[in-house]
Amino acid sequence: MKKFCMGHPTRKAHWHCPKCDGLMCPECVSARESENYGKTVVYHFCQKCNLPVKWVGLQNLIEPFWNRMPRIFTYPLSLQPLMFISILSIATPFLAEIGFIGSFLQGAMWLMILKYSFESLKATASGNLKPPPVNTQTISDDIVQVFKQFAIYLLIFIGFAYISAKAGVLLGFAFLIAALFFVPSMIILLVTTGSLLQAINPAVFVGLTFRIGWAYFLMYFFLFLLGSAPAFLAQYIIRFLPADVHPMLFSFAQNFYTIISYHLMGYVILQYHDRIGYQVDFEDFMDPAAETYETPKFDPDAAILGRAEPLIREGKLDEAIKLIQTMTAETPISGIKLSERYYNLLKMKKRRPELSEHAVRHLDLLTEGSEKRKAIAVFTECRMADPGFCPTAAALFKVAGWLNETGKTKAAIAVYNTIAKSYPDNPLVPKAYFRIAQIFHDRLMNREQAIKALDLLLRKYPDHDIIPQAESFLARL
Image (cartoon, rainbow, N blue to C red; front, side, top):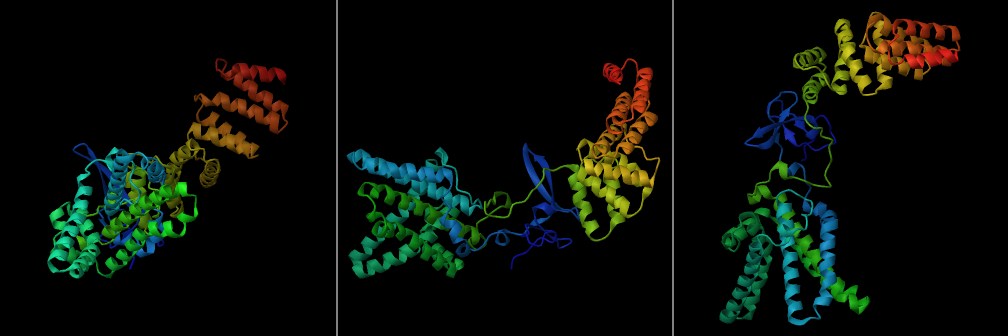
């Protein structure tokens, strides 16, 4: 049975906290980075308990291969593998016409396809369900593994020839059929152990087949279909197309289904990695079709909010407030999300002195983030609760401008006047007087009040940069 996140019931759980028994998706854990010998390591913690969490395991995140078959069949349909297959397939008919060298190059191309297929199998088995890139490493490096696979087939046919010669062709074919049935198991062992001796050891590959169980038979059935697909296409589809494209299309189908076959075997390793004894780490898991999460980069505010949220969900608002206050005692809140959460908590608990104190910082963050509607709402709420509430001059200046934009001209004039009264030496005061004059003239059609504001500006701040504009404005009036 699949396990789901407690905070997001429709999302599969990735993590489990052994203390509170909580199940969490990546958005619900706290990720913290640490430098270990020059390498960045990410640790995951329960937001409620602040203790390391454990990965629930891959079985909870992936679906059985028989349910995933449509996506397995489309595995090579990415830009790089598709171009790789296409280029090799287009080259096939031309190479067939140049004799021995052409045959040699065709063999080299088939070797590259097998090597890429082998890399697809290894990537899938490790948890990366994206096709590997096509580069020198994937098509040529460590090609010994492919030759080890050839050695498996060679040993099978040597065994077939030997048994046929000694005990008759009938027993030889019986051996061949049985051996070919266990080939996927041998390839799985070759990938997981890297040892040819382990792969061809009957005690090992037979035991592995039975550990996988009936799913091995189902995988073998799909592999049989994939292996037969190019011949089926050649018989019933390709032969009806122009003869010149037959080799090209047959090569494309052969290459395409070879990659799918190896990807399927890799997925079986992934699905049954615990039975096979193959280690898969959560850092390696990458599935383009899996759920996606907006996991923000680590920052202190996000970590604080992560620890406060479980308390809030349990209704422990005072504890959440205390936690935020303790964790921000030395470093002030710098993110709007945490600031807004703290503001709303204080408002719900009617802790007015703390609310007024935090609202100053909250308004600074809202105005810096151009959150016009929220900034006006917070300023209005705080002024109604405390007429003496006074944010910073910069926040007041922006709020006054937004009030004017929304048609609340008188309220805007009042806020501009608050700047002049509360911060008489602030460089924004002359600009506030100029804006007051503009509002009186442009919005309220009150020429006399506009002139008074400009006269006051000219008299009190004769050396300010805005004086030339004020003089020009006054001359027009």
